[in-house]
Length: 308
Image (tube, rainbow, N blue to C red; front, side):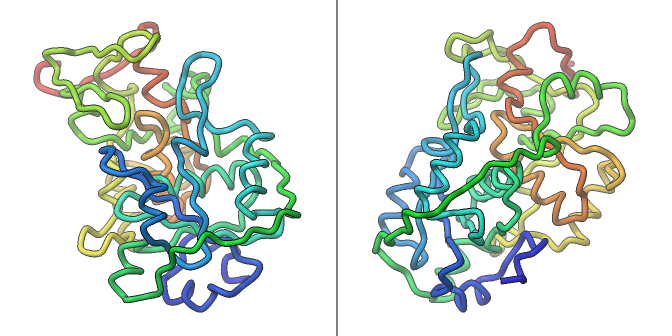
């Protein structure tokens, strides 16, 4: 299993040869942002043999005291969730999704944040696995109830609003907005998962009890939409060289502290993971993302559209 050491991406042929490995846990992290099906429904309709299902929205997130939704679970809850999924301190984890990797990369990031680096994402995910005619199961695996998972937070993986504020004028800190271009530009307002996007005529949209959502991006941020890190032909990741070239074209350097954000920190994990593949290591994810920044009228924003 040393192959997973410092190797964040594994291929389907490798995983096919590890299905009976007792030291390996496979996690199905599929979900649907359009509410056409729940991740659990997708899992129940068929999954990689031995896989358990964890949903980023219903399992891996909670609403904090400030009303910020989809935040990373606190350590006690996260450890209990991992143990319930058969993941212990010595377990190697492979997580997969389908064409939307963000559920998988969110768990990859969360495990790394909590000090569990024995985790990789399946390249091509469920789509590639099916296309290759590999085995599919309907069985729910029996899990080892004796697993112990210990959270050892690694603070560098998590960026906060205060770090963002402190880095706005620091050339050694770069921000990457992984949302679609129209949201980055301020031509559309980000709204919660499962909702539609509102145009600039509306400019703001109410989000629960929080302040109205604003359009735009954090000053100085560059835009690398998370999905552009994938090859649309087969939903595999671009090569590390291509990913590095994309980052360099946006003015990013591995020597910098690079922080990714999106609406609620989900697609930002895909952007962060892609930068990791490109050789960046000083990476952080702004978990509260635009839901925090975009609803605070005291935080600066930029717009790059013609109506500015």
